[in-house]
Image (cartoon, rainbow, N blue to C red; front, side, top):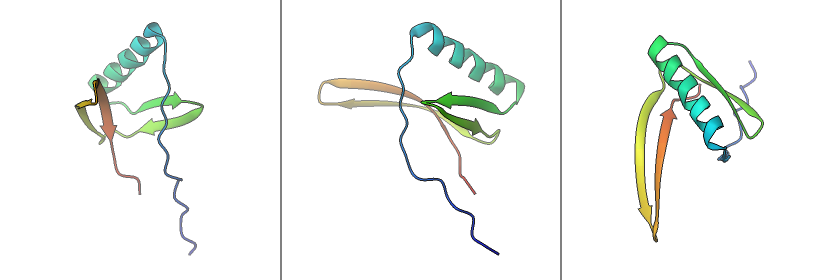
Length: 77
């Protein structure tokens, strides 16, 4: 049986106006509360976040910059 091709590693990042960012966060919160899969498109790529994704918040400080990341992590089979 042929091996399944893995997706290329990449790091997508896109900035959004505040209203669009809030809309995406609200959709995420609704999906989490309702136990539904979250689907999002980032920089033209569609991504489905499974129900068993780990949710965390990360804070980074480096060279005069600070960053907060709301993260969803999961393993890909």
